[in-house]
Structures are given as structure tokens and as C-alpha cells.
Length: 445
Ligand SMILES: Cc1ncc(COP(=O)(O)O)c(C=O)c1O
Image 1 (spheres, protein in one colour):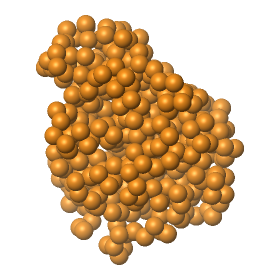
Image 2 (image 1 turned 180 degrees about the horizontal axis):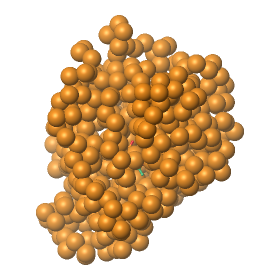
Image 3 (image 1 turned 90 degrees about the horizontal axis):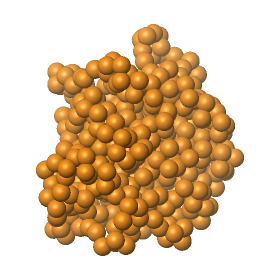
Image 4 (image 1 turned 90 degrees about the vertical axis):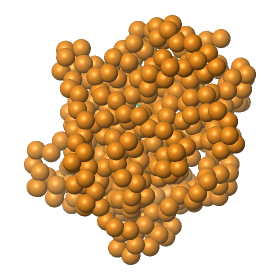
């Protein structure tokens, strides 16, 4: 069996909310001034009301609105594919499957939440959205989602990626989105950072500050977020719920589930529906994979920190490298975030999730092996998951079923592959000294 497909009618009708099933409560976002938990009304200044409700919901299953399901059917349910050629190339005894989220119009898992967030905002009378983007996948996804509901979308794109990937901007424009190289002079925080660091290549933390400021200072505009928060992981569980059904259809149970982690949304949405198996004592491991250049889960501290560089967001309890982190210009732009989702961070803290980190050259080698065996050129971010799959597959037995989330394709990342082929990619590990220094600047809660 090569491909496991579901019919349109089998597309989940509800998302899975892990909050009531977690062994401990996720620490709430905290107001940096009062050090008190943030009140929902405060979050509603920038987020849709419904998303804020979902952020703290204790309902285990939450209806996917019919309008959202209708848009999902443009590409969902997505295929679950047996990577038989990759298995042979590695010489593994295990079975390997991948969930192909690259078949969405923007090319990744990101529209699973973009469509939901655009829909809720539109439903609540909002017609303008702002956001940040690193690699450009999220900005493309929100531009696509905005086009489905006739909304204006403004994207602050990290300058380094904006320059590396001009075609992502054009894709956003094709769907009606407006894309700017961040830091811009459209916001106060952008102007301030440009003055202090005229040559900065930007960062996700800076772009978030700009997008949040824009939404907070315009009554008709709200902010949509591509990862990290509970409601984003909730929307992404459509992925894991489909995998659950697809594996059940062929009588398989996963023993190892793997995903790359930037903020934690593709990995979270993929494995959270399987968490209860682990809590019930079943043999199943969850492996989060990140760059050695941005090792938040493997080297960061589990503390309250700002979600952005400009310190305009509430504090979140998460694994972090410090919000002052300006990441090195590695090519997996979507993995260059200083923090991680609070849900994922808690599960890592409780040892229910493992974390691994790799250098960028070895992950590009893994991605090339995948392209040559399975045919699809992966996004640089996805290469991190593939590298971990290969390493685990080498050690696995015939009783193992490894399933990973193929979070996106790399068709807009050819400049990164060019750099790899020409020997221009460098390996880099973020220095422990820098992490220590950044930790000293973190607010004490
Ligand atoms: C293809 C792809 N995979 C993974 C990620 C990482 O984000 P997250 O951890 O939220 O899934 C990104 C982020 O931009 C991405 O574009």
C-alpha cells in the first residue's frame, strides 16, 4: 500500500483540543507590567474573539465551521504516503510514512489555521489582517486565506527571507496580500530598530512586534498568528486526526512520530491527537526536531519570556533562547524563532516529547535523499524532520512504524538548495554563552 487516501466526507468535522487532557495545566500568558495572567479582553484587542475563547477552552472537541471545511476541501484530506523507496535507500527494517501537507495551495500546513483565523475575523466584522512571516510560508497562507473571504492582508516579512525569496512575495501579491521587508518604517518599533541597527536582516521577533503594533493601533485591523499559541495548534490537529484515521484504515499504529519545530504548530497538530496513547502507557515516542543554530527546545530555558523582540506581546512560559535572540541566517527561515509553543514546551518539560537538533548541511543531504527517492523536494524546515527520520530508521526494528509530518515543499526555496549545491552553506551552532547572556535579560516571574 503506497498511499492512504480519505474521502472528502471523512475530513474531520471537529478539531481536537488537548488542553483538558494534559497532565498539568499550561501556564497562562502573563501581563509583563502587572505579572498577572492576561485577561481575555486584553487579547481581543488584537485577536478574533473566537480564537481567544479557543485559547482557553476546556472542550475536548471543537466544531470546524462549515465554511472552513469547504475551503479545506480544496486540498484536504491530504495523503498519507508509505516512503518505500526511502526505506530501501536507508536499509531500514521499519516502515516509514509521511503525511503530505505540501499539497495545499501555498505549499505547507500553514493554511489549516490561516483559513480558520481569517474566517473567524471575517465573521466578527473584521476585513483587515496583519501578520509576520519568516520563510514566507505563513504570509502566503494568510494571503491565500484572505482571498477566500475577501480580506486585506498585510505581511511583515523578515528582511533576510524577503531578499532570499522574491517569489514568495509575488505569490502573496497574487492572492492580494501586501508584503513588506521587516523592519519597515511603517511602525514605531520598525523605525526604532532601523535607527539602532541600520544593517539588520530582521528577525521573526521583530516582524511580530511590527504586525502586532499595526493591529493594536488600527481599530479595523486584527492580527493573525502562524504558530505558538494554543488555538493555532488546535486548528492544526486536523492533520493528526486524519493520520489517525488513515493509519487505522490499514491497521497500523505509529511507534515514532516526528516533526520539525519552529513555533511548534505542524508538529503539535500532527502528534497531539496521539498523546493519550502515550499517557495510557502505549509504546509511542514523539520527536521534535530543530536547528542547532536555533536550539530552543534542546538548549533554551523553560521560563516566561516575551513572544517578540519589541516586547509588545504578553509573556509566555516556554523554552526560549531569549526574545533578544537575532538568529543566524540559516536557510530554514521558519525555524528561526526564539521560543516554542507553551503546550509543546510543557510536554517537553514533562519528558513526554523528546527533542533533537541538527546542522543545516546534514539536513539538506537528508532532503536531497528524500527528493531522489520519494520525488518531492522538501522545504528546508521539513528537511530537519527527514534527517531525524533517517537517524531513527537506522536504529529501528521491524516492529517500528515511523510517521512524520511533511510540512511543506521547497519549490520557493531553490536559492537555499543552490547555496547547498555550490558548497556555500555553513554549519553553525548557537553559542551557549549567548544563551546564558540572553537568559540574564529575561523578566523574572
Ligand atoms: C514548511 C514549514 N515547516 C515548518 C515550519 C515551522 O513552523 P511550525 O513549528 O509552527 O510548524 C514552517 C514555518 O514557517 C514552515 O514554513
